[in-house]
Structure formats: structure tokens, C-alpha cells
Image (cartoon, rainbow, N blue to C red; front, side, top):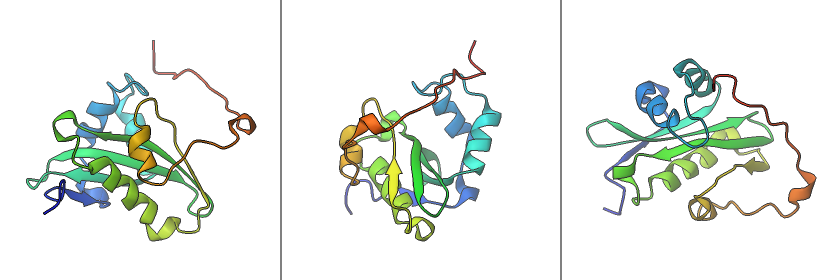
Length: 144
């Protein structure tokens, strides 16, 4: 058995444990204080994957915001601290990218502050022309 194989990777929404997902995201650097209702809506409107212990406890999550035709944005990837270093984030990301419904997508993007090494192993690379990209950044309405 290879490292991390004792964990189960599942794309079955019925396996998701919203309290675990929200519990992590509300303390993350990218969505501190996010209400559970927004997390539930984001999960509902995305292609999702989770990592689970043999006992069925969720220890990781990732989602792909996609049009299922041309584009996908990878978001909210995490593995709980005691379960890191086992390749779970990589396995979840690769499961999303291998999903049959996104095989026609020609562009996948993400933003990360500190996990570049994980995503390089999944095939992501730095933007060749970052100057062509633009954004609208609004402060999260739920933050004080």
C-alpha cells in the first residue's frame, strides 16, 4: 500500500461533511469567517471531492468551479493538519481533473499563497502572461 492509500477519495456528495468543510474554511486565510450558508451554496454549485479516513471521517476537500465545457477554477483545497504529507491534496486535485465531465475543458486555474509544489505535481504551472489577466476584487460582505 502506497502512502495515503489507506484514505478514500470520493466524489460522492453524500459523503461530504459540511461541518468539516465549513470548520476549515471559516479559519482559512482565503475565507475567514465565511457563513455556513455560503459554503453550502459553493459546494452545491461545484464539482467536489473529499478525502476520508477508513472510519469515514472527512479530512480533506477540494472543489472545481466549472462550466463543464471550457474552463475550471480550482478552489477551497485543504487537508486537515494531522493528515497532511500523504498526497491527499494531489489525489483529490487529480480526481477532479480526471472527471469525465471536464475533459473538454482547456483551461484550469487556481490561486495559492503557499502550495505551489502540490499543484506543480498536478500539472499546473505559473501563468506565462499574467499581465493579460484582470480581476474585480470585492471585500467579502460577511466580514466585519
